[in-house]
Image 1 (cartoon, rainbow, N blue to C red):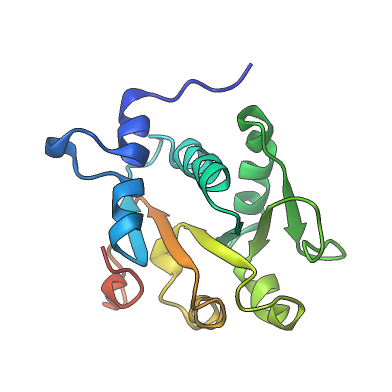
Image 2: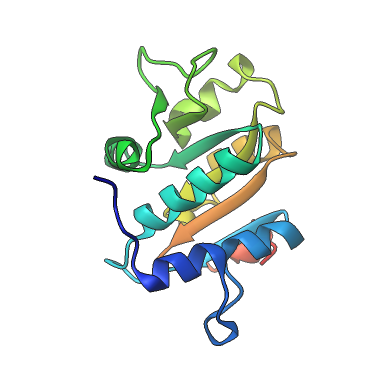
Length: 172
């Protein structure tokens, strides 16, 4: 009863076709931080859920899903069960500290105010939805705190109106 990814989503995560780019997994083996650009409606959430499941199967670390709006915190949490996963929420009265879930989903606003609750090495991977926002100060605060974590950003719009380059946040 899970979700069958489309061919391009599978390629996005695992690579295999050199004409379409290397894929996230091979990039994370070479770089500390990777930006993925996918057009609106092509399934960024499905792709990052696939990548999360791969990460949890291959690494002992937890994963942090970071976004700037409540609906972007909730959406992957609701769909994660179809991938055999569940996520704790770090927001309001809810906290992922000490939770059995290996995934924590949070807004950047909540996480940036609650960093002291976590150890800097609590997460091995941070996935940032709508990553064109990640050059903002709140994101930088979270990224710097969890500086040993790999970072993966998803966006449909890599250009920023303020001219700040996402190359300041992502290596590849």
